[in-house]
Image 1: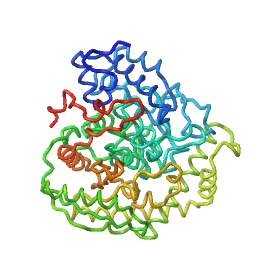
Image 2: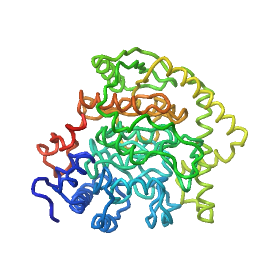
Image 3: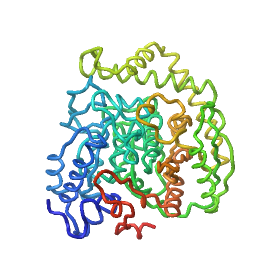
Length: 491
């Protein structure tokens, strides 16, 4: 392949998406060369990581050779997660053997918007069956490994996307989040993971209100600016959406580098369910609290009110019903029931339990969650952000990740239940060299404050200077990236 002399295949991996797009705009590289470089890196690293499970290289190269829309990411390669987001003519399995031969017959609205932003779709990443586990493994496609330590989980359910981005296969990739599935893998893989406000992005044309608003879409990125610019390119209601998020006061990209002011940041390292929290995860929050205080913010220790047994039961009811709905949806779509070996045991168990939930019980659960949301809204009249560990443990060994309750000790589902935006920020590594994210919950509709703080933290404690070095790579090349051409201008 013809790669520009100034930038090698591996050096592309060190640039964020905005940096890669800048090279295309300046004529230093072509979209075809960017895509070829991404393909080369996937082919070299995927046998080790198993992040990309559906490859569409010829489609990608054909798209790169054509006139690509002049968007903020023109020519940049991108991967979709094989869950919820549809791509016409491409296999769509949601990690299930029940759907192993299923092919999408339409594009999701988000897929259209991603292409309009100039992104070139390369394929799809691994996910657990129907996204229902906090790790990334399925009977259909196998286990995805963490680039920082291949014996450990990359987190779930967007773990395939996280492993692809963390290893530099692509600079960012699609994720979705109904209970932490963008933020878990962001923590495990040292990435920035923003969960937007409820209904910030559309689920149409197939879906409207997924899990009563618990689920949202966005991406895992290496830089804050990529997340903000991508959100500008994809946010906004779709035709016929049942409701939508409050529009931002200005573009999200304008918040990157903007002065956040003196924020009131509450923090807690005490989980509400008495699950143990690893000392490294506690240390990560304490370190972040000191950093925020040093940056001039008002930091105090305080628990989030309102998390009680009734709220926990409501979440369990809604998730159980959600799994039953997913199976029922595909039964209706495919016109047949799954065979015993076409769903994994945990899916069968949750679907059967969910099918026994009455309509009245489900609506009571929704009511309890909405009441809790009002409690959280009152809390955010007194503080601007709530800081906690993202996870209760560092990235776990693969054999332990799916069944460890303490791994997900902190209630990331709070953001999904209330609709509030939240983010996992990669500020801490433990003595074993494993990344540990910290989690900030914001007020409803206020991604702006999160992005301002995130970019301030990124400037104070740059995380992209650390890069996982995998088999056959040169540490000197891949541990200290130079700033991409456009980075200085964005600050």
